[in-house]
Length: 316
Image (cartoon, rainbow, N blue to C red):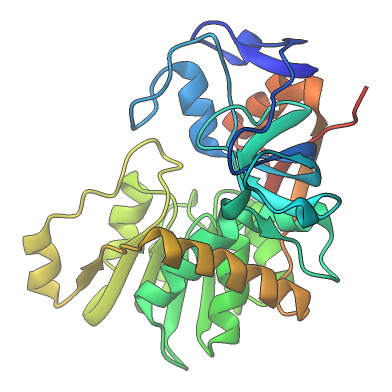
């Protein structure tokens, strides 16, 4: 089968299409013919060799989130799964490929009315967005600042926070990206690359931080007594690193979400259910063929992408 290999750490050019052995579904596993692969920012860090967690050494096939159709099952798995549209994680690697063998019990069936590409776009980002919003618990009328509001998670948070009754202030890098969330329901938008952007944003009750670094530290200054800040990403390359004593002195809570595997699964199911009901729409901004994984990584690292970036897999 076709796959994209990382032979050694480095730039996007290190992602090379090549053949790989076809996986066989083992005990309790299902074989999925992949149609779409979800690419995340952290995978660009993994490729470069500076992931924020331990990872497999090359050679390795990157990628964790896939969507496709079950074509076979291994011993102990339900044969009725064959032919069903599913989304699933692969356990951390192996997704940039035509076929994957995954835990049958960990898959999620795609609800009727939800396109497979949209389900893949919601697999990780939908889970994260639901988790962050529930952790922050915005109340109707509160002003919620969504950083990286034109990104995969950010576009979903804009919609979810608005549905919760919040006044949504979208923060994004550049005028084009700041404009996008307004079409998703954001009440206001600011460009955090502009000097003095915090003055335009005004007082904020909840910060949903997807950037980290200096932008997050500036956003923190907008919070007062009773404010909450929850971080879900580090697009800047570093976390916000707000000292607990600074938060306490302002009466601000630095929310640190935690969830069990069962809860994480429920978060994804919730996002898929909202999409099936027509209340949540992922933004898929870029699509690349499987062989274009290097181009996808280049686009993400250039900060030119909006919404979700997917690989489209067409079986040879």
